[in-house]
Image (cartoon, rainbow, N blue to C red):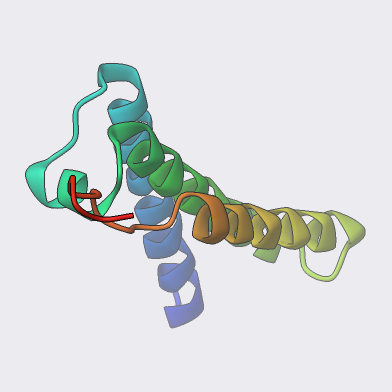
Length: 100
């Protein structure tokens, strides 16, 4: 295996781990303390991690298709998912009672 292939394997594994981590938060409704502090609620944390994980897996899979239309569609879908995650579910921290 060359370096490019190892990079794809590691990237895919990280994407799957992120998607599983986010899915677990969405299913259980619980998140680790550090993650819970960074987001307004557990649902947003779960969606953020799930979208990023699935997008990373799509980029890895799309890269294996070469320069086909399927690769372009997967890449555009991944960019849209990351954009949604960053705009809608980005980490903001919890609002305290005195903040507006």
